[in-house]
Length: 306
Image (tube, rainbow, N blue to C red):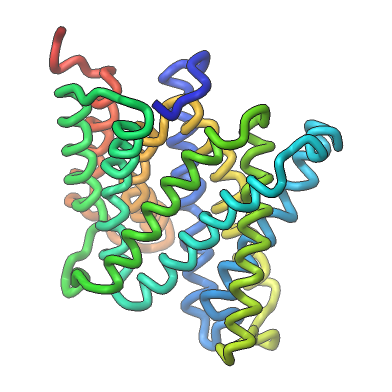
């Protein structure tokens, strides 16, 4: 399987993965501020580029301070940039996918990430399926769909859903290769390297969009609130969250870590509840199914005894 850090206990690895998803979910309301602002300070492609640049600007100095300049010089920057390009491409596909469908559809498609991760580990690592893994995957996917919440007019399979699926596959591959294709780097180093690659590629996408006549930034609408939201979205939702995610993937593998992503809609609901939103028992049930699926798939609830 993908995991490269077996010394970390399953409990600590799952808690780290949970923390990654919590931080990512907490940053999503900040993204809503930037996306729903009227007028919007940044169009989606430039927002993604700015988010990645903000994350890279945070991680690169931290990496240098923690591990020294020698670690940066030893890193394979070409390979890291190639892997980071997948992160940028996945983000771009998600932007285009969400513009052609809905956030609910994107969340439903994202619930397939554990299945995609498991498929990769079966074909690339020779992982064997067990009844517990199959049941855990099923519970996680069903729970993720329920946790996505409001389905009133929100679903519609088409080009938007396919683009979202492409984003999920791309992100899954990028996460796996961040762990496996950059040997000798710590999770901080490999994440910093790939996020820098994503920033380079994301900036290139942004410049191409401007050259093709797509809307540019609206600097007049960019105040302290918008800058703070961008910092939360980039530093929290990408930089810090991604470091924790890569630690978890290195310990649990991409498939087992991906089970946690289906809890994100529930976390978002809880955060929005604190901001005046409403509670959904359907989403809570979905979150419970995902949590049980995580435990069953990892054998922490031994339903099927050998």
